[in-house]
Image (cartoon, rainbow, N blue to C red; front, top):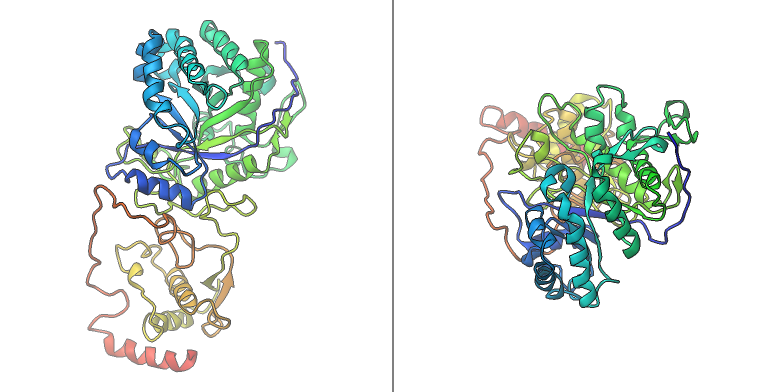
Amino acid sequence: MQYYNVHFVFPAEAFIGVNIGTDLSDMPHPTQAVALLKAQQIRHVRLYDADRGMLVALADTGIQVMISVPNEQLLGIGQSNSTAANWVSHNVVAHYPATNITGICVGSEVFTTTPNAAPVLVNAMKYIQSALVASNLDRQIKVSTPLSSSVILDSFPPSQAFFNRSWNPVLIPMLNFLQSTGSHLMLNIYPYYDYMQSNGVIPLDYALMKPLAPTKEAVDANTLVHYSNVFDAMVDASYFAMAFLNFTNIPVMVTESGWPSKGDTNEPDATLDNANTYNSNLIRHVLNKTGTPNHPGIAVSTYIYELYNEDLKPGPVSEKNWGLFNANGEPIYILHLTGAGLVLANDTTNQTYCAAKEGADPKMLQAALDWACGPGKVNCSAMLQGEACYEPDNVIAHATYAFNSYYNRMGKAPGTCDFNGVAAITTTNPSHGTCIFPGSTGKMNSVGNITAPSMNSTSSAPPVRNLYYNLGSMSFLLLRALICSIVFL
């Protein structure tokens, strides 16, 4: 097969954005969602519709917003210029420029999810574009449509990639439209699914964007270019697929990418650690502006799928667990973002924590833990059974929580993280899951100053049973706490 080696430079700066899905039983109020975006320094969002409440809440924030024509509206818009004009009037003109709308996604993955609308897809895009021209907004707002990466066949090696030819009657005029309007090819890339469907051919580290030794990298035999991750290979494959159709100057934007933090029993790699690893690596990779191996330095702006876990999503458990945050604005995990700038500021770059030392004497740890939760006046309720920090139920984990709480309560003053030699200061955030440690940009700081309550917020009282003190052992523990207070004061 003929292959192409394409080199060009686009001026756009790479950015990280976030998709905002709404399939939650306790969907936050738009003002809550926007407060979370602002607190996390998220400056680019994509909506799956043009919800008026969200567009109003996003006004005057400067956040760049991509809105969407839902697939179910494509047939109407694709067959009527006036319907498209009316849509733009209600969903764009009514909000711009207070709301910084920068793009319109006309449908999403139409070829694979709504193929009956594919014949009118390009017409819909053109009609939306015409309405923007009529409103003198075509330079500020670009029109495109996100594609599933599955429309690209023979994607490795990237140099041999090509689009599914059955869609060429739609793809070619669509690419002509994108080229003539200076818009992006929008692509949804999910290395998680590529990995799951590869039957072991794709290594997990290659899917997770972990650093690989050169001998472990995949090599394109035609170009001799090395690939260390699925994401880069798919982006380059899309460039080669476009070049195969003689389009060589359309930039790629990734409109969805992420990794689930929880899955069914047959999805063992949908874990908190893997989701954290993938999204942290992805954010760093996009923002360091290295581009892809075959297109170094060319921006690949990417939207993470997605802001919230969506408990109402149908399908396997993983479908409900792609979010960075839960409905309360608490991070599902703390991203490892050293060197990635301010976006998604729940990182640990400049934070310090107090943790139990590995290998410390368990009896010394227990004594220090008892002192912290007693005379040390640390609120240890988060470690009660059933609460966020109960698991893992061991003395090291519980001591770390108590030590760090005391360290923060004392203003991180020198000498307040020692506990007779069983604790030490660390820059690694020990938070995990919904257990957010004091001092981390998490539970208390993740959503900023929110005034609007969650629409269906509920609360539950903690259990009465105390983790460390009960009637049978109260006198013994108080005695030990008194001894500890003498030792540690």
